[in-house]
Length: 454
Ligand code: GDP
Image (cartoon, rainbow, N blue to C red; front, side, top):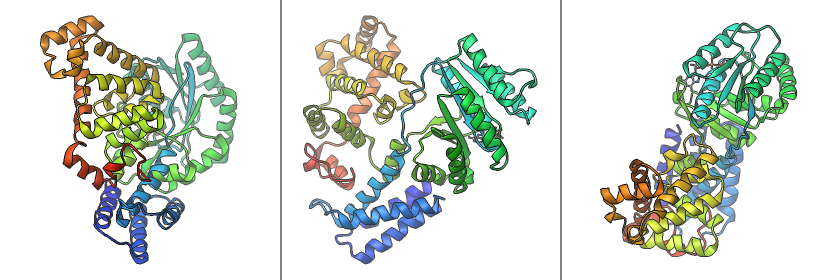
């Protein structure tokens, strides 16, 4: 996703960063290139126009920092604007237990498939789920859901053909979930091939009766620009609280996501990446914006830390970042910091080596994992924490016993530490300074304010 956009912007940034001076004409050309890149990615025109207006204002308005060339300044502006745009679609998903979620969308958009994918994901995270079919006009939709539910071994209602209307069926499903103690009820609602007033009225009624904790729209990424119009229509009537973009595997452009984030400011919660029940990813705008912009995750983490740590802690982290020498004590401190930051899945997603942990886990799980990691470090001797290289097989076994985990878990923690240390050490020394500079960061500024946009 976004490959072409990334390539195009990357090319532009490369050319610009070499420029010592930017004339008004250069800026005009650069803006035009950004516009073409976004339109090529199939971002909605309205969103593109608004985006460029913001970039232009910032590019001409702000003072250029001494340490940056005008080219770098322009890149910083585009980066910041893109990030702001994508971050609008960031929202932490904190579903209560139990919860009920309605999936809405046009027919063929991927609702039923997504319902099963969600049940699979939340089921794997330890939440028992019930899938509820309510498209009483299309018996085949119910049959499809039952088939998928059986495939992923999840409860489904109704197993037999419908005997009631959509709302009554959904309510019966809700009652069943309560009776059987399911912690997440996913209601697969009816779809039509096109927007349809009768369907909207039916969904509004259903929402009123069910009082769901979430109403999520499933849209097909391939519909590109049109996705925004569909989302607007659903949002107007149903006050959506999230969007799931399906079939991203078939669409390398990704404009649909930028359109929805930029046009409606709705969070894109998950993205579908294939037809199988496992093909669902949590959408991480932050990682994505940085990928588009070619920023390293570590910088994002340091910046985040600046926002949530107190000054002193942030400075310490930055010094480590520049000087190297990051040991397990620092790692433990990071973990504690992360646990305090809240909003963990977002942050953990940025930590090198820990991304896989964040995928699919909910906040409780992440907190548990972090506490376990702290316990593992707690079972080490001070020497081991200072010099992690001495931790051999027998030490690992002792640490595992001491903290009540498996040796594999100790290994996992050491790997995570190593990856983080590696990422940090990459930013020390001359080479690191060059890397920071190429990202538009002035290493001298670390410890003080970061340049705007970063
Ligand atoms: P619904 O009518 O909205 O319930 O849509 P369905 O769930 O029946 O999906 C319509 C078609 O899209 C089916 O053939 C699905 O297998 C396919 N589909 C759904 N999600 C994805 C996805 O993320 N990637 C791909 N490649 N196909 C998908």
